[in-house]
Image: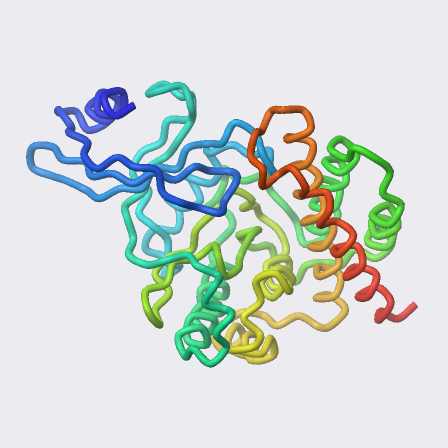
Length: 321
């Protein structure tokens, strides 16, 4: 693998490249397999991270849009790694991958168990600022992503995840069908179309002490309603609410230029995101059942769905008729 990577990088750089320290990085992610290495060539060198597309898992995504979004955010004030090279066709060693510059920091949700840790509050506020900067980007600069309008942003995303749900489920899920119907009856109109991260949360960022150094895992990025990110970032599984209440996060987001949504607009996306995570879990479960994935992380993913449906119904129950 190292020899193949060296040969491929040499073609990209235009001179012989030596790779050292190639190793798999431990990760809880499922869509990409991270590796770290050092690339050196005459007159240059770089510490790198390589993200290899997993054979199968929880998501059906390609690398191109993710890489192009990261590249397009360079110099924007949104903290992202520098995009270096991409092999979309698996030319180097059979699996598609892209390479970014290494960024200092750790992606560890265990810190959320320590609510008195001041770094959590600091990083959560910086995440709000990063979200506001992301959502302020001119969407016309991201022509590699399918277009969206304020009127159809919610409808388009709902249709996408409903199609995946109907294709990936292994059994009937009447609770999710009810949630789909509820969402379809009241889609919100976006105030503006933005670049949406799609998986914005603790666990998908790097932090070094009290400093957020990079946003990671852009595989679900798309153009749409920025409220989608706001309805995802404080879900119970990864919420920093014990350190920074959601109202304070939204206030920091607004102070940085973001538009704080009204409660019903936000509620729709909170319900939608429970559906979205349910479908991700069902996709992982099908991958394992059909033996396209051997990851034990996918083996019981369908068991997570009832909790997501229950949360959806709690949110719906609070909504006005």
